[in-house]
Every structure is written in structure tokens, then in C-alpha cells.
Image (cartoon, one colour):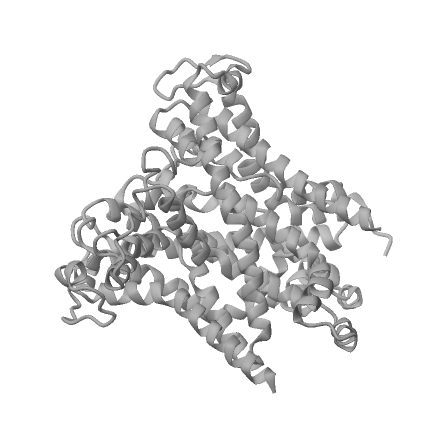
Length: 300
Length: 276
């Protein structure tokens, strides 16, 4: 068995090599190249790419520069979406999982499928369906509202309605994912704890607060983290449903990066913006991770 | 018992919520069978008054600007090839790292897992530029290759290879099988469910991807169905909800079919992305 010769190592390496190659070419190299681009005045139409060091980054932080507005307004709008969508994605996801859990066993599968099906379609389909439902004149919701004697709501053309519409469509589309993760976590809460709880005369609410919640805490963290990251990457919903409007109020950061890079052809600026956005995302994940770790230690 | 009342409440609630999830898809289907006139003016009709297939025949006839079959076959081709590529390189790498004497094993594994925390936004622009420089924009290469760098599959498979009993491999080795034969004949068949999970997951995420194919394809023949639809929505279908919904329904059918067929694996995959 002691055949760990160079020959054996070589054949073993062949297993990892194809992935390592793709990993290097399509992940590592682009990151390095992105940093390189971000340090140039990189205009797609201008063959001369001048090295400018950190100038693109400094421009983003210079309130005189148009980049400043482009970045921070986009960031503000993205944050707005994250702040409202993430708590809903977590709470409603957990709510649905609890509901599935409380259902008679035979029905669980059916309802889980019903709630999860929208997750299987793409964002362009989500947008088209909901655009038509939210349409001011012939949309489903406004027709019902008018039937009931209310006036029509400008779902897509007014603030805050545009955000409300985007968030409803997003919940409909993605909540199934969080629900399934929570369902799994709930199944792992031990029966004995519940039995002990009911012996102590705990009601449903007390059981939930004192037994269920503490047990699924790691899952809460995971779902909050993945939902935050996913919400940060929002692009398709506002791009297709509101075109960033009304005005620029649903113009999210990713849209501004694409605009600066692909329509204005200022690749250096766009690369600097995307690296900054990635850094912010990494910091937020680290903070969320830290916070729950500290809480855990404080409990101990 | 007061429990019966609670149960009725729970089931009713579940049904009301299910309607919220299913109704939009049903409304899409209903609209796709309506004439545009009816769609715009006739109020709420869950069943079309005049039932027409015109929207479907128009979309499928591949009129000048809607090569639906091309888009659909592009999406299927890209999805299948991307998935195969991911499966091949990921199973190999995960097995190598989990079981074989690969040099710098720990470092490589840490690097791959670490990459899962890197936001995708950091790579899409330089990736686009790279493909541009090699003249590969608007080709299948740009639509397939980038998905292969994702370490999720390596991570998923690594776990199950670690859990695989070593004795079985050793027995095969004693019978004279080499590493490759052990991998193909003994190890792979045992992790088939995980491979299915990864396959469905990967296929659906490639088939449904939006921004990347939108940015990297420009000719109507290279579009995928999701980007094709988005372009029709702003283009010549803008005033025809019937046609748009028919197109949407056509695009939805394959994924929903795959989803329902592979539901168990898919849900397991979602679960496994969670932490234990």
C-alpha cells in the first residue's frame, strides 16, 4: 500500500487538473484581470488604455464625480431592496415551512410543490407574468380593486408601489428555496424536546420561541446570508419590470455597473464599481457571520 | 377537540397561499389562449371567452423575429453541455481531493471552498472582456464554459465521496483495478443520487440564467429562450400579451417538466446547500 510514489501522485493529479484549469481560467484569471482593468482608463472605443492607478476608485468616492452618484445611488436603491426583501424572505420562508409542518402529512408534498414551482422559472418569465398582473389598466389586481370600488394603483410607475411590486414578484419567485431549507431544519428539531415542552405545559407559541427558534438558528443565519447575497445581485426584476423607474428610483447598482460598462463603454469605471460592490458584499457576509458567532459565545 | 378547528384553519390557509403561487401561472396560461382584444378589454376572465391557438401558432411558426425553436434548442443545448461539463470535471476533482494522493490537496480544497464566497459580480465584466478578446462572444463557448468554475458541485460531491466506505475501494484495488477503474466502476455508481441532484440543479440554473446570456449574445440565432423572451417583450410583442404569454408558456414547459420529474432530487439539492 505504500505506493505514494511520484507516479501515483501524478495520476491522482490528473483527476483534479481539468477542474483546476477551468477554475483558473474562468474564475482566478478574471478576478486578476478585473483588478487590472479597474486601474486603467479603459474606454472600449479608445485603443490607448492609460494606467491610472486608484483614480477610478477615488472618483467613486469624490462627490464631484458623476461616478459617485452612479455608484451610491445604485447602492442606496439596492440597499433599499435588501432591507425590505430579506426580512420578508426569511420570515415568510420560515412561516411557510411551519405551515407545511403543521399540515396533515399526506398534504405536505402537494403544497410544497405548489409553493416551490415558481422557483423553477427564469426571471424574464417572472417579470412578464407580473408585469401583466400589475398592469395599471388591464392588470389582474387593478381590475379586482376596481370591481371592489377602489381606485387603480400605479403599481409600476409610482413609488413606493414600484418597489412593492418588485418585492412581491421576488417573493413569489424565490421564497420556495428558503422554505425548503427551513422545512429540513424543522424536521431535525428533536421530538424529545417537543415532548418535554408539552409535558411542561408549553403552548404552541412558547414551544416555537423556546425550542424551535434556538434549534434552527444556524439555518436562520444561512438563509439570511444567502438571501442577502441574492438580493444584492438583483437585476432582472427592476430591469424588466420598471426599467429602473419611476425616474431612477429602482435603478439598482448592478444596472448602473452594466450601464457604465456596456452602454457607456467605460470598462475601467465599471470594473472598479463591481470590485467595490463585491467588497461590500463580502464585508456584509463577514459581519453577519460574526454577529451570530458572538451571540452564540455570549450565551455560553 | 380544539385540534380539529386548528387543522381546518391550517389547511384553508395553505390553500389560500397555494392560490397565490399558482394563480399567476394560470393567468399566464389563460391569457395565452385569448385574443389580444379580449386580453385588454374583457375584464377578469380566467377562462378565455374566445379560445384561440393563434398566439401559439404565430410564435412557433418562427416568424421573422421569433425563432422560438432555435432559442429553445440553444437553451437545451447550452444547459445539457454545461451540465455534462460540470458533472465530469466536478466528480473527478471531488474524488481526487476526497480520496487520492493529490499534492497540495488541503490548499486546493480550501481555495475551491473559499471561492464560494466570492460574489459573481467581480468576474462577469472581465470574463466578458476575455471572451471578447478571443472573438468568442455570441458563440456557444461563452454560454457554456463560465459555469464550470463554480465550486458548489465539487463541495457537494466531496461530502459524499468522503462518506463512501473505503473498504470497497480497497477490495477493488486488491482485485487489480487501477484508480480510474475504481472510480468509474465502484465509486461513481454509489453516488448516483447526488450526481442527479447536481445535474438538475446545474441544468436549471444554466437554462434560467438571464444577465450573462443577455450580455454575451447579440444575434437572434444565438439567443437563449429566456433572453429571447425578454427581447420580444420590449420589441414586437410589446402590445400583444397573448403572443407574449404563449411564448412564456412554451419556455416554461421544459423546466417545469424537469422540475416535476426531478423534484425529489432538486429539493434534496436545495437542502444540501444548507449547512448541517
